[in-house]
Length: 404
Ligand code: HEC
Ligand code: HEC
Image (cartoon, rainbow, N blue to C red; front, side, top):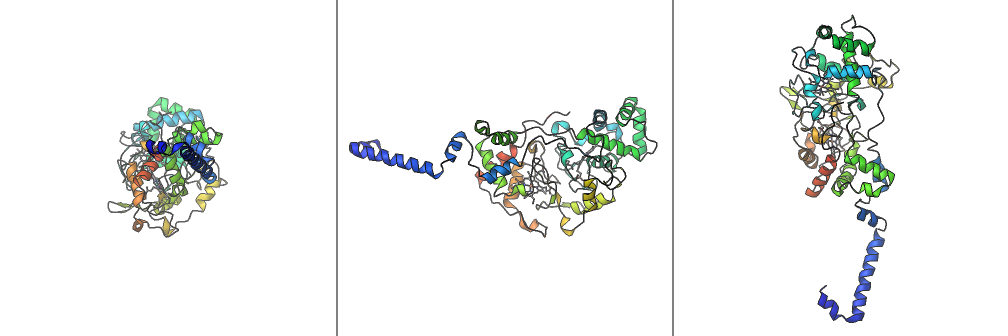
């Protein structure tokens, strides 16, 4: 309304305009009475159900995970020995490859490549080892049921470090400091049975990896501030990230799979990422189950320190290979994503915007599961895309944490 127009109304008219404006303001306030102060404070009016879902993505870091199948977890001498092994390329057959060559500490313990080199039979993206101790199944296909078993395979696998047990024993004997570290960790000299050594090394490597916990992120600060009722603290979390979070737990249905503090339910799913590899297909969980059951190092075997009563061994005993497992891969956690591009089991999506586009434009023809459909193309607007990206980025710190 023009100033002149208001003047033209006279005193009574001006009062009326004022009253009308006041009434309109009051009405606007009574429509959303409790949300107004939150908006002012920079917090979206989340519903109680949404607040509950937000809380379920914490606390972080999670309580220390104790793996009963490996009694060396948490033992300082084993952690120190495992750390030495992790960086030692002389363990590999050709002396040129260490765990840390692919799981690079400064890159959140992955290598930034689409698929690892050497690729072996299954060319796959190198996963970050942050928070690996919390996974119930390991590898993109769940071929292992413990962190220590998943650490033996790369030591011995022909496509990876390709070490023979006898080579490992010889490497340790050649280096008195390493042999001493072994004795300190295990309380005994090197085993006479060469088959025991890879298991010991796997357990020490797992003890070290169990210390690799990703640092707290802006999302964690927001979640905890909301839990404390600290509105000022919560309001530091950008509104775009809050809108993206709402999309993530709501319409996007991302939490169905990316659940809990680590943003994964630890299970396997097919989201329509093509699984062709040179000369065939990567069958994912289908082949992984076969390898799990055939492994001498699974929890059903004699190397499980918890024995047959281990509840996780019971889970391994009950796995059943089903047709729908074909093309399923483990739901990855989403922490420190900013530092772990490219994405997916085959590294086929280069950037986070590519991942969001994948879910937005999802090709339903590519989903090969016969079960219930959780996913559908989200057809996100540019604003929703930016919001979801802001949220996903808030699950990372500015730089990955230094190696312990
Ligand atoms: C040549 C590169 C390379 C080397 C060397 C390597 N890894 Fe890996 N690592 C990978 C790839 C690729 C995967 C995914 C394998 C799969 O899913 O089949 C992986 C998976 C893992 C996993 C499972 C992680 C998860 O989230 O499920 C663990 C644990 C692991 N590696 C530990 C190690 C250890 C310990 C060593 C050294 C003994 C090692 N890796 C050496 C590339 C490598
Ligand atoms: C049905 C379960 C499911 C749902 C729902 C789901 N995801 Fe995923 N997500 C997966 C699986 C499985 C992968 C790995 C697929 C592969 O490698 O082939 C994945 C991969 C990712 C990755 C790549 C991570 C990495 O390290 O490579 C991101 C990011 C991601 N999802 C975000 C989302 C977002 C955002 C949503 C919601 C819009 C969502 N996901 C919904 C199961 C799901």
